[in-house]
Length: 349
Length: 282
Image (tube, rainbow over all chains, first blue to last red):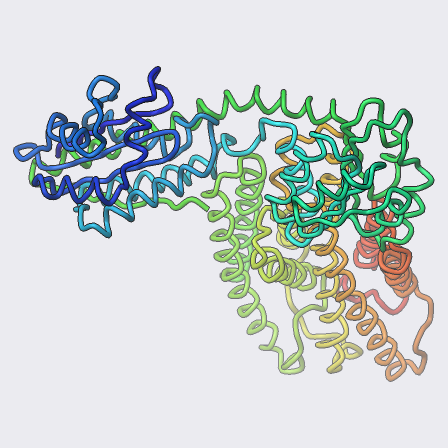
């Protein structure tokens, strides 16, 4: 079989072609290609990349020139110069690597897998997939899942807030339905609120010395503002506490926390102190069921993750390469008339 | 002999399942998790078959008919390991906590291993004092409770590791692979809360049987005393964890002390010269 891949990604120095393509709906691209006599094509459009895959038998292969001409007409811009072109084995390996998140701006991110799936489904809905692209894309989705299940590219968060969320998940499991208390209303507090809300933390309480600022921050995230005098009472309810006030001395003393823990019925309490000077007394960490992490603890975990991610990427690369050569062998067998059996010999968890 | 071959087969399959479980724990390789489940499934099948054959041989003695062959170490250990693996299948594998296999399955392999390596598989006619329908109930209920407590012990081990990881502030990969702290805590508590009443029921049944046989319900023989301490320790765990609301390691340590007592209760039978000497086959 013949496979052609054109991509405009964040790797290109100039982004003008990618921007022009981003505004063209995938459905229109597919319709246009169909009108120009291309039978098998799929497009992947995200904010970081636009990719087009087209396949055919070796004697009726789609040419890159035809594809680019069609796209240029749709986008109304010159695209050829910035296009990365790949064919056959290289094209398949590229799609696998994209699905695995290895080609992403943030390596290992999982969103791309869903985007690849969407791209495939649109092509399928448009009647633009045949055996070749069906196998290619199903294989790519499989490789994407396999890489995430078997290597650590997707785990090992690379920023302080995502490490904090990941730690919270090792304590509580899912964060849906949990409640958080945020002390302080500065930029760091806001960032924390945003991450927690994104992970489904349902009850957000914000307390700050200046009531108005607590109120504003709480309102932005459908939370509840708590008067500064009342935050110790709020400790009983919260599962996660994030402290980032500008107070000159610790506002959460061991006595306050011990008092709250006694009335929590054994629920774990995860506390994060990102303030300098500290908001939470260090000895709080010694209380059973209370886990206090400070900014430097989180930063140390980020540094460690970044180091081990490099290893994980190498392992992921090996999976991608092995699966791409498997695919290549199958694609080659199509032309000989003796098609090799090609099954998902294993499914990722 | 088919029975011993099948028991050996089941033992080796459990060992293989343990190996797969450890590989899964260390690499999170999905294939090894599936392998583990396949090994357990085959092991369970071989084990059940061995148990069936043993039952047939046992029942060849007319006076043994309808009694279960749990009157010696081989039968008891083999049954416990069967119940343990079955409990793991029902509790962890169904809740997709297969990763706990590395903590639970070694105990099943050990139990069956002790049976095939060290215990005498021979069967004979039951001692007259054991020919009671209570034989099918009292030890079975208790050994099922032991199997469940052993599961809880495995979960407790994982819980201690996870708690230490998170308290250390330097969590390793393992920390992200294990189930969350709260999940482990809830599972540990749930198993113990459900099993303790079963254990107590088994003890009460024993007392009733003893009363029927000897006219005395309780005689403080070492096995009875140890089993009472076991029940009290698990009760203490539930009290600390759910009444006092205590978290951290202390309640888990108490439950593990209960587990140690349980082991002493079961294997300590040799020490007792009193009413529980029959596991030795007497």
